[in-house]
Image (cartoon, rainbow, N blue to C red; front, side, top):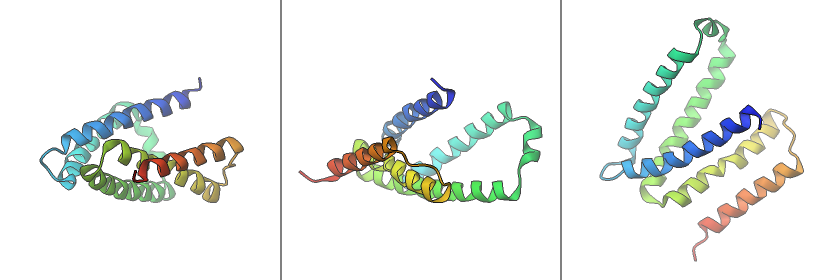
Length: 141
């Protein structure tokens, strides 16, 4: 297995835990407060990670374009997290988490439009299955 695939599966695993643990942490408080506390912890953990693994020389590689795109990514992450926590406070973890993972379809389309990535039949089928799963999960019985 290629290293990036292993990393992607680990990301999936931890993201799954994140949703359930976050829902448990929402007990008795607002989603907004929960998000703020979680984000403070994430900031501390990421800063600690950066301090231990990023060589100081890497910072000189940053340019305005990197900072612009990473800043925009931070903005969209912030908006995603705000709405995710609002949904998580009100809804079931399984449904909210699945809808959130529908972002993969958005990513596929944006990667095709903006990055000129190739959409293969395998990717089309996978995306269609995700959309199908979303429709099944959100349909009221």
